[in-house]
Image 1: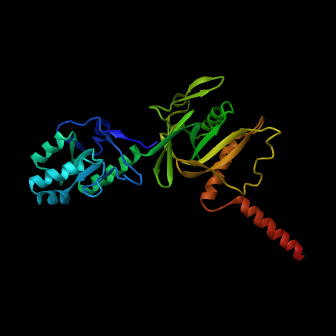
Image 2: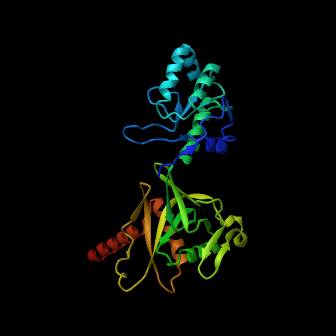
Image 3: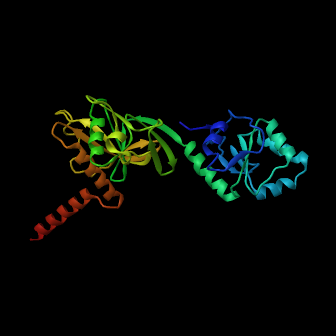
Length: 316
């Protein structure tokens, strides 16, 4: 789901970070800042003034102000009227930009607010793109537990009752960090990264069958929690049965993946059976994944050593 953010929320969330104040009346508070990746109506969330391809948030800096001052008042009026036929939701003036009072009144009458920032042109545009990129990122929610294990964002998933929360609790007690229990919100924050976090205000609590609700912060301290993390690995917990014992990869030569918001994420299937130390297995999976990210594949190394041994024996 593609995100959006209202003008009211934009001001509340980023007022201090972007050093914003209203340069006009507080109008258009329910208008929504968006971006579009459609083939027919694509536009950016934020950009400098562009009359050909306007963005949802228009930044007016020094050069834009100089250009506007070359236009007559009538030409300025036509320019903004054409802008407002498109996706433009609000105008933000940098510390080096300016709009004359008649233009501020015109924009306000079109139910678009004008903000002024104390930041310079390039800094404001860069920060706006960063913060709005996060706020408007494509998002989804998934059932499972999200943890940081050996610096790897690891998502535990599987059928209800398979033991995800119990395994997560075991991992937390071994020094790893909880990000989200039960429901995790994922967002595509860049072309190569999906970020996961708790969808609510607090990730302090976990529900464990037989124990009820546990306060992780009170039990293990604040260091046992983390706000968000890039998703790097999915562990799919599957109950081990005689019927499915042949479907698990013995050597690990094939890397399965799961598509998350259009990005392929490595997925490992973990058989769940009595007596298996699942916490150690997940830790080993995280360490092995770190090695793979560094270019080393233990399965390929093992097969190559076997091949060389067979070749050496054949010569002997």
